[in-house]
Length: 178
Image (cartoon, rainbow, N blue to C red; front, side):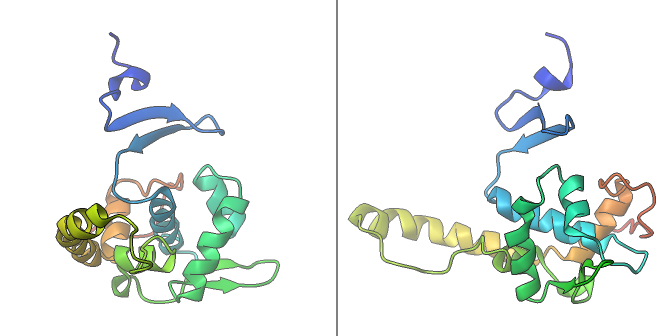
C-alpha cells in the first residue's frame, strides 16, 4: 500500500477526503458536533484577523470550504451571545466582541447552540437510570476541559502552525509556552 494521503489515514480515526473546492479535508472522530468544530474554527479565524477590518461571512465560508448559507446561523448565534460582533455595511463582516483570553472553547460551543441543557426526560428507563448517570461525569469533565481552552491559546497555536487559514502572515506572535 502506498503512503498517499488517500490511504494513509484509513484507520477509522482520521480519514482524508477532498471537499467541494478540491481541498484536502480530514475527518476526525470527535465528541464535538461538526457545527461546534466549525464555530470554534470560525471564531479562531476571526481572531486571527489583525488588519483591524471585519471579516465577511463569504470570506469565512470560502476559507472553511462551505457555502455561505451554512455559516449564517452559526455566525448569528455567536454574535447574539457576544462572542462575535456583526458589522453592517459594504465593508462589514464579523470581529471579536470580547478579548481573546476571555473566550473559551466551551463558551463558543454554548453560543453556537451545540451544547444542550437538560431537556425533556428520556422515555427509556434504561437511559434514565443507567446510561445518563454513567455519562454525566464524563460530560462534566469534558465541559471543564473545554473551559480551560481559551481562544487566545488557539490563536497562539494557529500562529505556530502558520495559522491554517491560507493567509501567510497572521500578525500574531507565536507563544512557545503552549
